[in-house]
Image (cartoon, rainbow, N blue to C red; front, side, top):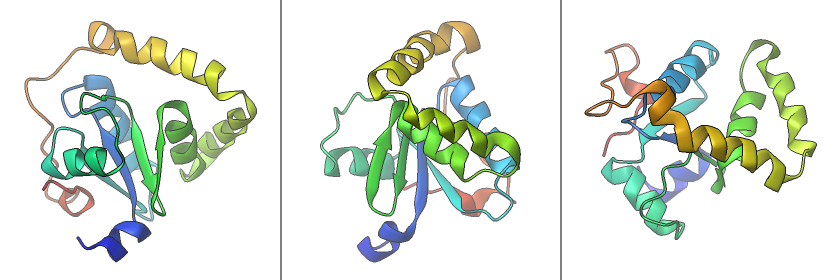
Length: 138
């Protein structure tokens, strides 16, 4: 994928070993009938390249959303993705008015406990053949 193509994409980066994160990807796919979102695990080579390019800590395991060349993390990323979903989920975007430090406190509490509450996989999920083109794996 060249630089120009990357600028046009809407890519969700997720922790491929996290059950909550994998369920979230499935949730988004079901509510994204136009297929505007693509996905890449943070553990993939591509995910690691984006982390380096944007000078994020290498060990970051947050939900990351790349839209129009701009990187969003934590609660802002989640709310921006909700804005593009079908149905009433886009209404959640109203919480963007809540100050980021407050939103991120809630986000970080869930993120810190996600393995304990939802479990962890041994490896990243493997997309079904019909979803394969939505995933970037290199």
